[in-house]
Length: 79
Image (cartoon, rainbow, N blue to C red; front, side, top):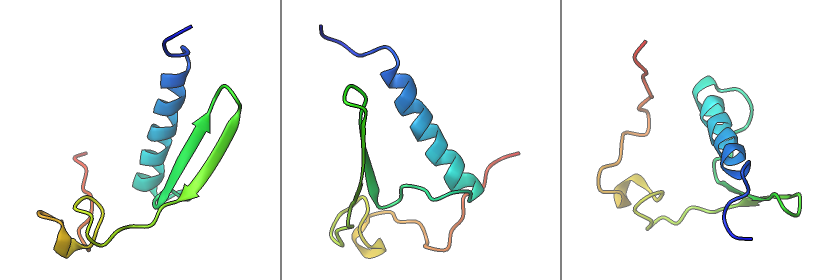
């Protein structure tokens, strides 16, 4: 009774791919600033707001990040 339920990686992969599509196309509301908790055994889904910490090197202000991109920079994809 150990291991991963077969569909779990697929479900999480689908959710991650959906978030990427929402960010690239501007359609829908992405989970920016939120944490999605999904319990597939209990069929429970929770969305929790997460606040940024200014001193966090990953998500803080540009001044606190070692190599932060300019705030007005855009993502360009090769076509």
